[in-house]
Amino acid sequence: MKKRVIELIEKLAREHTLSLEEYEYIITNRDADAIERARELAVSVRRAVYGNAVYIRGLIEISNICKNDCIYCGIRRSNHDCDRYRLTKEQILSCCDEGYSLGFRTFVMQGGEDPHFDDDVLCDIVKAIKTKYPDCAVTLSMGERSRESYEKLFLAGADRYLLRHETADAEHYSKLHPETMSFENRMRCLYDLKDIGFQTGCGFMVGSPYQTVENIAKDLKFIEEFKPHMCGIGPFIPHKATPFASFPAGTVELTCYLLSVIRLIHPKILLPATTALGSIEEGGRERGILSGANVVMPNLSPMDNRKKYELYNNKLYSKAESAQAKAELEERMKNIGYEVVCHRGDAK
Image (cartoon, rainbow, N blue to C red; front, side):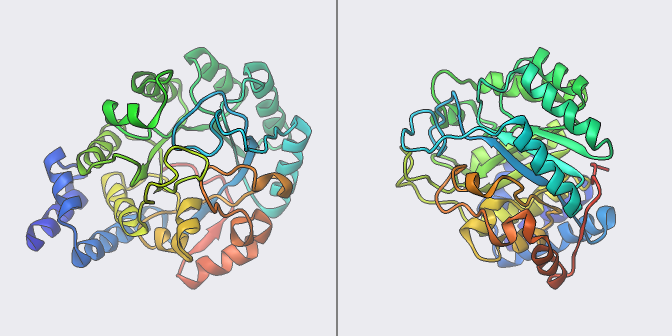
């Protein structure tokens, strides 16, 4: 069994594809040796493409107001205890000013699906950032929108769009989302984004409620076939004000293993070591980098708002998670043999 798992991991490193059954097998039958072999190969592959560079993105959480009621999310519409906020254009540009002075050359605007940020408002902000900082990339993570909306944002100058698919299984999707949301529309959004020309990112939660090994295998096959430029995965962490409050969290161990596997599927992919990894375990983000990730996203949001953007319990928002602590982050990466680089860091 052990030999078979390692053979399949090595096959993936060579051919960048496995069958659904093979993906299931390497998840179900992983052991310490398999995890280490996947990690070694992932690091080797990533080093061949990106060297020891870790790209940093300045994250700006522009609103925790959301029209949706996703069952796992701390800023879901039904959470009446959430202390809501919305950044103004001036506040967002101020975050970019500070980030630029710190060396950031990619700004990631993330938020709930806040109706205030319609096409006119969001396009105006994107244009303002690109006019002031033409050497910077603008990434949006603002949820599901129409194709026409995505086209307007792309024409306004947005370079990248992150939209986690959450799960590649329609039945599992329905267990994580309200009836007003559909798996088909989420997929439509992702394919529209890629077709329009965005550098497109997808992703999923590891250990989300009702997730099976078959679900994860489908996620990996979807990532293989969709060929995203970026992929954000992190352990599921419950939020106290959701119906999933008592569900167990995902694990750093499986998340890091899947980071290695995704790196072997697409050697050139931009792969973040997410905040969730650092939130669930001290040094979790470093473990992600050592497993094949090559992106970190420190927080540029106003300090007063960071704790309010609480998607899950105990989310990191200060210390090395803070963009202002860039020197600490650089030191932490240096200690594990990596170098933080500040340029745009486009997908290769």
